[in-house]
Image (cartoon, rainbow, N blue to C red; front, side, top):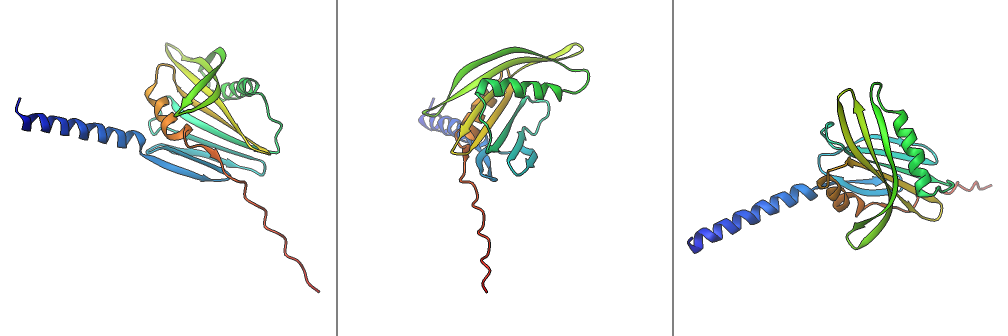
Length: 194
C-alpha cells in the first residue's frame, strides 16, 4: 500500500473517531433551581416539578423504546435517608406508576462504586425485569446521592441491564458534571423609612 493511501486511511479513521466522539459527548446544559448538570444532545427534559422545598427533573432519550433516562430530585430541609432505604422507597413508588398490564420483578439492591473519571461515587444498583404478556426487558437503576449543608439531591439513572454504551455516555456527560449550585439567596425585605 502506498504511503499516500495509508495516510488517507489514517485520516479517514481519525475523522470517523472524531465524529463519533462529537456525537457521543455533544451536550445540553441544565442550570437552574440550585442544580447544574449536562446531558446528551437530543435528550429532553420531559418533566420538571418545582415546589418550595422540592425539585424533580426527568430527562430521557428521544427514542421511547430505549431504556435510558435519569431523574434528579432535590430536597431542602429534608431528613436525609440512607441511600439503600431511599432506593427501596423509590423502587416502590416507581413500580406503583407502571402501566396496567405490566409486571415488575425486582432482583434486589446492591451497593456499588461508580468510577467517574478519578472520582468514585457510592451508589446502590437495583436489577429488575419488566414483563408484559410474552415480552420482557431487563433493566437496572443506579441510585446516587449528593449533599450539602441543608440540601440532599438524589439521582436515579435507568439503563437496560446489558447496555453499557448509554451508561458510559451518562457517566461521561451527566454524572461527571452534576452538582449542587449555591441556593439562591432570599432578597432582603425593603426597610420602611419614616
